[in-house]
Image (cartoon, rainbow, N blue to C red; front, side, top):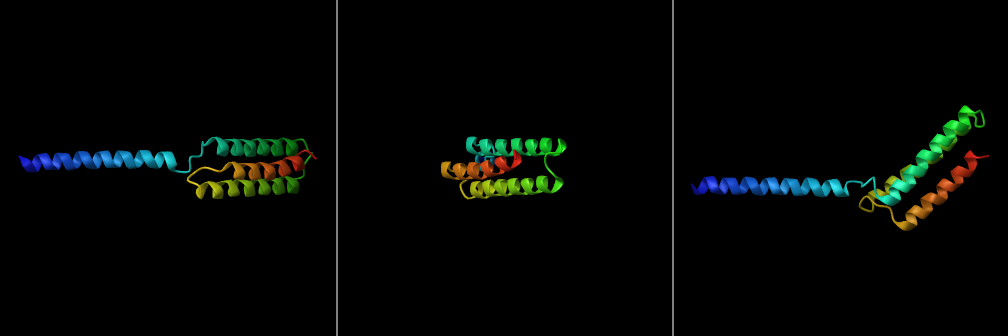
Amino acid sequence: MKSIFKLGLLGMGLAVSLAAASGASAETRWQAHHPRRAEVNSRLANQNRRITAERREGELTLAQARDLRAQDRGVRGQERFDASHDGGHITKAEQVQLNHEENGVSQEIGR
């Protein structure tokens, strides 16, 4: 009888441990929806739409569109790198730097 009780207790402890571990990893794993990351990524998506529209309208050449998208990929890569070193977040200073880089690309789209 004691061994069944111990087994049940061990099983419950294991289940609680697994549930806690999976919940904690879901909160910290990249946290792609963190407000600063969401703002930066939303701007990148908007810029991609603008590049597509400008290309469609003939205001950008294929080479220009490729170059602008490559610059945006660089900004997105930096955002991911920053987040990976900060528990899934980006700091306010990192957000300011990323926005500054996005502003440069944005001005090139509108030329």
